[in-house]
Length: 553
Image (cartoon, rainbow, N blue to C red; front, side, top):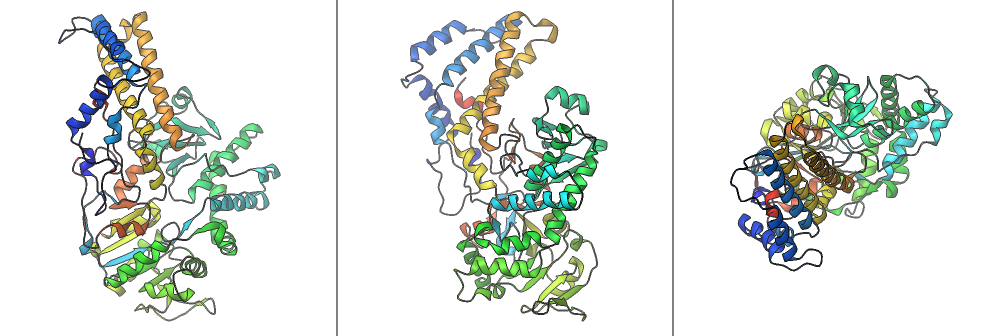
């Protein structure tokens, strides 16, 4: 197992416990099991189990012998599960601040750096989701005449994750895997989790076909947490109240309310009224932007937010670093607000020069960009004509895979996805608890595979059924334990409970050349670095898979 050697680590970084060869890791597991005394399982007990279930035939002559062999290996595995093998400590730790690569990227070729604002340059505290949720539900009650009881709803930060899908026809909120199949333990109607039987009854199969996919909407950006929670709460209210409703209307109303609190400025005013509550300061951001300027790179800001909101936020974020609070503008060659992405990438809207003092737009044609001026609207076609910045010399950073990155990716720009929750998920995956459960899961999965390859449906004896039930239950326990480490309702953002890539990961593959948790993580790499795709990717580049054979079963 040498998967750690394919990961991209910052210059000067080292693996937490050193680099070890795959045979050393495997030997370490075996030594841990066979050479170390433990308080729970003695060497003689393991030897007795091995002798009891030993079948010294290279190929089993019948089904019973193979089942006995699987049973023996499972019993041995259960004993070994009582102790976390020391070999886990020798496995590499992934860097939570690392840059992970889907497409090779030579930073020395990048001359222009573009940035979104929200959740890219500016990061927010968890309080923001509650603010958006509260403002949106209030709007639904006041303007859309939803029942007054809905005002009592509270945002639940433990419920949603990014990358969920809502079925506007059936009203289900679900997590999909890389291939478009519904996660068995990640499908909710309102706040009630559906059983596998209910999912199959509703959809016929767990796989979402093209016709059904047309009714799904993806919730992909960081503002989707409040949206997903409010959709589920509204559906649950109508179910509990036994009121008829159309699932599509619920989504449309929630989405309209979320859009309203942004476009009306309600959220922006709330944030600027108490920036200390909502904005997270970060001195490394300024250091990164200044480093780019010192290297002669061009910088531009392209955001859908209005200028006064961006200006207020940047002043707050930079006030401890700049002598003058408004000096953040000096970092950027072009500042474009209210860009209306993703239409910005396909429309032919003209740029308008914005007067921040008078809060109005000029009527003159924009045929050149002045670093001292602010621009509104516009389109990619005009942007390229004015700047002459083309193709692979430009990289754009954004958090929304569709609105921010799909357009630039198709236009030939390089793209960097900013996924804030990546840090926490890598920290969890680095833990021995997660890796141990992952290895247990893979061992049991392999034993189940052998079982089903050996026993046909009409051959199951009482012993076979007993073994099958035990294996399924053990696998489910390992799966549930891993899921709870991330999110109790939907598990991890990037992978399913079985370790397969999620649909969100699929879109990262499509539209992000690289991904990381914050733009300033690029400070960990030389500006001339070549970022390479790992040569043996099996799932996401940041994810280390713990092989079952390391347990020596």
